[in-house]
Length: 248
Length: 269
Image (cartoon, rainbow over all chains, first blue to last red; front, side):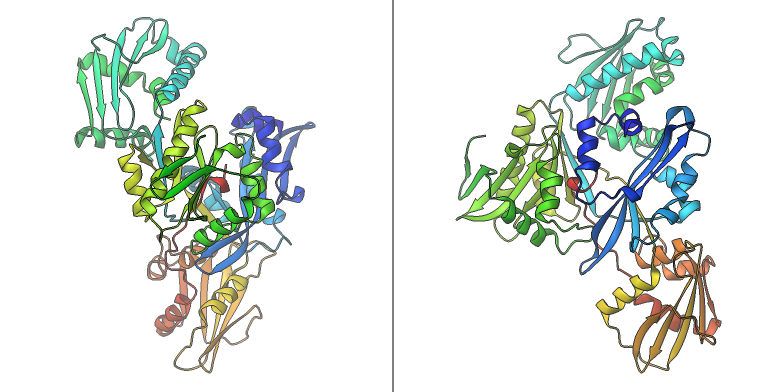
């Protein structure tokens, strides 16, 4: 549980609710990978009754969480955890297992190991921003990143760019990126060096499999417009890792 | 939150004793949708009332002449966990009233956004959300695998009870890449027009089919892969070749034709 809370920033209250208080939680559906007495990975399933068509309900196993300790990533630990599904679910009378997983991860890991297939859902998510507090939080994360990651921090000292953003579903705002980091202004009178106008939501811009391709397509179809000096636009592109936080 | 009136509909916060009626309402509304997890009092109390970021004041109920016609449960963070309304009873007014209430509640608690999961085909919710300045975001990808093909085949046959014309047939399906504790083959028997499923291996099947775990799942759940495509890509092999049309006809009984999967936010994360 400590590993889950550290990795996914889940509070103790949330974890206690998600698993210990869950009426369906079954300890035998938890697998933990240990290294010298320390938990370094784990996977948890939750049993559920699930309708798979208008009139058919089955017992299914929801893959609730898969976690690998940061210091043990890239060592192939996730694969045996996922492959263990075969052993862990034996005798549990589940007719199928399912989960909400990043498709890139399924293509690389889950697919070849256990043969997961994507089911087209007819669920959509509607979102309304209430002010710019979400952006403010992201700016804080950007500053944290600017301090902790050398690849970002070394690009900042020579920089002084102001970018105005007009994104779909959000109030306009201005980001100032300079030697001190990133700051946000809501009703600034500053004349920005760059203007970004987009009739796509941040997630629409950033959720495609190929982010660069999505950006290029948005630029070509003029759904994304950038006005200002080309030099500043190139600098901005070089800071895409930092600005990526904005679009997450 | 104060009591609001949207013409003839009344909206009020949750009161103790509402739970059972709300659960019945949810189950009745969502029952026809795939992806539905039936609510029991125990499950609902856990997934809504006991949630750390949630309290009873985050639930609003809509009434029409003392009848529940809708409700919504929203977290303080603005995530709407459940959203239900009666489509046959002034849908637009109920949806608009519930959404306004949720937005006000989330805003009051300092949430940065309001998020609502809804079925794509729900035109009423779509229209109201567009009018209210909501944008649309993609839903996380859902993946699944089948663990017990014979049992699933049996359940689908019980449901569809197909009658097949033509001669009797014994079809042996070899299931590749399934966990060792799962049946590795399934026999589909056609006798006097009736179809049955067995896990007994027949010595002399009239048709033999080979498929792996993901091909079988893709075919059943009607995702990208169709039966024909699976044959062309040699992921589904049928012998003898002349039996392909008949085998495909029989396999089509086990297909779920693009079921509308809907997952409320309360059921994950």
